[in-house]
Image (cartoon, rainbow, N blue to C red; front, side, top):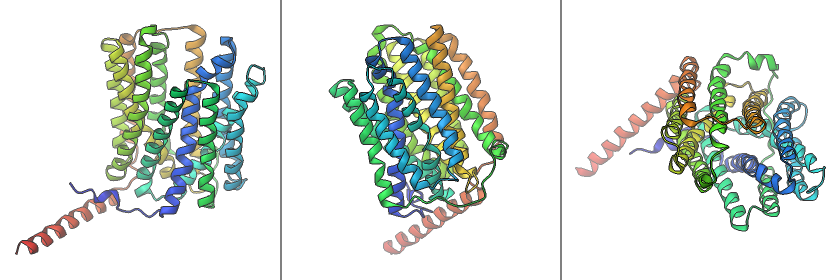
Length: 409
């Protein structure tokens, strides 16, 4: 099998590649790790469920708000300065969980964690887009996603081995945030200049809207599963723990595969695969709910997440305008945070529970309908580039056959 396409059209230098991967993967890993640990750790700090819920609302809402703010100020503040301040903020926010424990100021920690979640997201994702060309962007994004979930799984293993203590979470959080400094030593992290577009122009961008709709539906469908999974019996706890680990593992591997596939076949294919895989995971959950079906659901949904995340790390850079890519990425992260916060609030306050066999067909229909905008969207990776790559591979094959024939003679 010819794997030459893995190296074709790679223009990013090794130094830039290491800087991009370091900054993006450690930043994303910190975010996923904190979201994963937040509720359990907050329960150990404050015993009142209302305070736990309030802390989660502050965390997610300020994450969404700060992402928009980050998109606004990115053109007014130097990228390097913004990223440096954001990394310092993330380290302090992680440490503040211990400093403000058992006091009302712990809610201030939630606010700081939210700012650390969203403020620099538009800048580091735009940095990835600015330093990659379209033909390699998804592959680089796939490598970033793979490294991200390796770091997340490693962090979860550390916390599990030492016990889910506040100290272990703080240490992992500080390590992941401080590791982002490596990128600033390797590269100036300069911003590509361009005419800045308005938010209205970004929202009116047809291709971005068509690609964004499936991401919106995907997050809504995932949010709805909270009503089926939050009130599972205690005998499902081990299945949820095992499933969560497999979820991250599946996301990392699928992200790597999806990234390379997206650069070879285009952006639409991995999106459709991700939506179908999520539908399949819902089917397993709805057919007969059991500890095994819960593990299968988490695993397959992790694969679906991997295919989708890598595309939505690349597509805003593909369709975004140079100088305004931060706004595209800001909208990309704001949507899942708001949706997750909304569904989490409803499930927590109402204690509403829906049987998986009732929820599964509804989610399947929603996901099927979300494929339609993808089919209508323009393939951002041009047919010319895809054709040129196939022709090059064909010529390479012919060249190898000629060399082999000469050896035989």
